[in-house]
Amino acid sequence: MKAALVVNRVLPAVDANLAAILNMVNEAADEGAELVVFPEAAVTGLVNNDNPVHDLPLGQTIPGPITEALAELCRERRLWLAIGLLEREGGRLYDTAVLLTTDGEIGLKYRRIHPGWHGRRADESVYCRGTELMKTRTAIGTFAFLICGDLFDDGLVQRIRDLGPDWLLFPFARAFDDGSHSQGRWDREEKAQYQQRVKLVGVTTLMTNYLADERLDGDSSFGGAMVVSGDGFEIASFPLGKEGVLFVDL
Image (tube, rainbow, N blue to C red; front, side, top):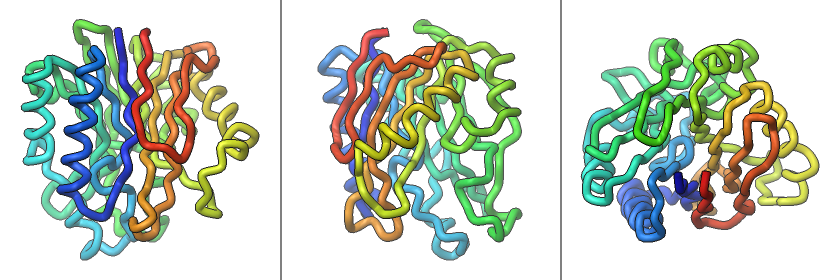
């Protein structure tokens, strides 16, 4: 399987972000990718501030216009596509990821279970969590999702171990408190932690983080992508602070 892990730059404009995402899918397809993976909240960034008036408009319906635009491209280019989206369902908001099939169907939808994507005082009737962890079977293996802070929840790690997918898709959003894109700090302080958590899962994991544009208010996510084997070793990586695509044969 040839996978493409995309580090996209997220701007304040959803339409511009979607156009860039579609272009990067085509770029990946031109290079022979069978699977394309995007980060958490890839169309808007994780810019919610616990105010429903501000945050609910960030949510996308699933299925909806965004997923249909992506699904059309999946059908055209015959590839699988994983992407994180803030999802709106009525007056509720979820941190969600979907895997679209080569036929443009939603093969798997996962709603983040760990609550770390919003503040502790956020209205729980608006800022909601999923409960289910599932895997889906495809022509290129079985897949499951975790999103960002889920990976650091021991209970969820055990549930994924028990589920036993071939591949774990891990869209995330990560920023340093000083707003930097320091590769050295990542290598010293955090990279090994992510590798250790993947080792606990025991499943080869494809992780990618978006790069927040400087105009994206309240977000300094630093990008970067990595594929980690089930025994915790780095297979391939893409540097922080750059937009682009990490291609890897698995």
